Image (cartoon, rainbow, N blue to C red; front, side):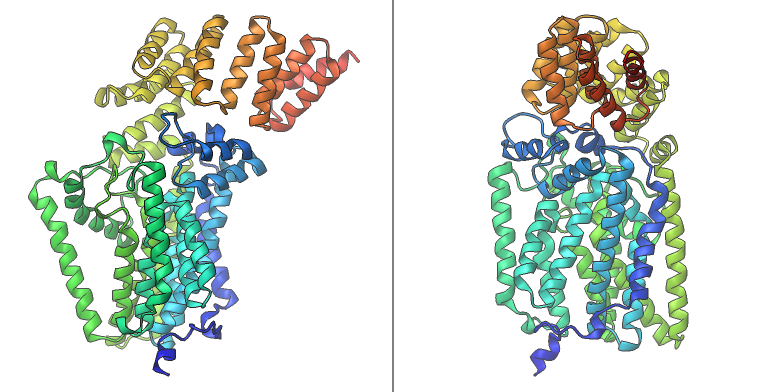
Length: 611
C-alpha cells in the first residue's frame, strides 16, 4: 500500500489534481505567446542563414532525405546538422508549407514554445502535488510554469530559429517524464527517442526520470522502479554508440578546432553554472553570444569564486532539504537544473561553455527551487498565501515585459548586434551579422568595416573573406573582390560561399565560362543547391545554350518550388524561344512566389499586351 502512495500515478490514475484548470492553461499560453510576438518579424540570424535561409537541404523532402543518406564524414558540407534530423525535418515541413520566410518559421517556434509550456504545466502539477502542501501546490505549479514561459532568457531560443532544436528536445523530455508517470512506458520511450533526434542534450532524460521517480517516492531510492528505467538507459547508450559510429564523435561535431580542451572546459564549468544562475535570477546582460571564459587566462580567483559560491548554495539547499518537508522541492529543482545541463556542462566540451539556449529545459529546475524556497520563507514568516500569489504574479509581469523588450530588440538588427558587442566586444558573430545587415541595406562601407573587424582577429576566417569580397564587388572594386575570392579558394577549393560569390561576380562581368566552371565545382559539393542551378542556367543562357539553361532552371524550381527568380528566368527563356503561353505561366508563378517581383510583372504585362 505504501508503494502505491509513493507513486500515485503508477497505474495510470488520472486524478483531477493532475489536470490543470482551463484558466491555468490559458495563462500559460498567453505568457508563452504574447511577450514573444514583438520578435515575430526579426530577420534570419546566425546559424539560421546556413540552416534555413540558404539551406538547399530543406527545400524539398527528397533533398532532406538525401542529406540524411549522405555520410557526415564524407568531407562535403552539411547544411542540416546530422545529429538533429527531427529539427531539420520540421524546417523542411515549414519551408514546404510557408516558404522560407523568417516570420512564418518564428510563428511555428512560438507555437511550439506554447505547447512545451503546457506540457511543463502538466509536469509541474504532478511534481508539486507530490512534494508540496495541497494548499499551495497548484499555485506554485502554475506560477513556476508562467515564470518559465515568460522568462526573457528564452527569447534567445524562441526568436533565434535554430533554437527550435532546444524547444523540441525540451518538449520531448517533459513528455517522456509525464508519460512515464502516467504508466505509458512504450510511448515514453518513443518520445525520448524523438527528443534525442531533435538535440543530443535529451540524453539527460533517464537521469530526470530517476530524479522524478525518487522524488515521487518521498526521496527514497528504495522506491525507484529500476526495471522500468532500464529501457531508457539502453536507448541512450545505443544512441551514444550510434552517434560515435555514424558521426565520428560523441561530443561537439561542428566546433572543430574551436572546441575547448577537456581540462580547461571542466575548470570553466563553475563559472558557466554561476552565470546561468545569475541570468535566471537577474536577467540582465542577456546575449546570443557570451564572452568565452577561459580559466587559463582568467586567473585562479575568477575560477575559484564561482566554485565557492556554488558550494555555498549547495549547502543551503541541503540544509533546507533536511530542515523542512518542502525542502524536497528545492532539492529536486537543483538536481533538475544540474542534470539537464550535464550533456553540455561536463566532460564533453563545446566551443563556448555559456550558451543561453541550453537553459531552455534547465530553467524549470531553478525557478521551481526559487518558488519553493520563497514559499518556505513566507510560511516561516506567516505571510499569507494570497501575498505569495501576488508576488509570483508581479514577477511574471516583470519578466514578460523584459521578454517583450528583448524580442523587439532582436527585430532591430543594428541595435541588437551593437548591444551584443557592448556585452561581448570580441563577438565575431555579432560583427558578421552587422556586416550582413549593412550589406542588405546597401551600406557597403559599414559592411566592409564589420567584416574587416572579424579578419583583424581571425585572419583565416573564410566566411568573412567571402562576404568581404561580395561587398567589394558591390562597391565596384572588382579586382580586389576577385583577389579575395581567389585567396579563399586557394585555401579551400570547394568553399561554398566563396564559389557562389565568385561565380555571381563572374556572371555579372560577362565571363560566363568562368562562372560555369565555378558553379560546377559548387554543385559537386552541394548538388541540391537551387541557387547554384539557377546561376548555372543563367550562365548557359548567356552562352547561347537554351536547352541546357532550361534544364537547370527546371532543376532549380524542383529543388525550391517557391523560387521567384527561377520561375522568372524560366519564363524569360520561354519568351526568348517563342513559347509565349509557357512564359506567361512562369511569370505568374514568379508573382505568386513574390508579388513584388517587378520584372515578372512587367514581362507579363508586355506579353498580355501582345495577345
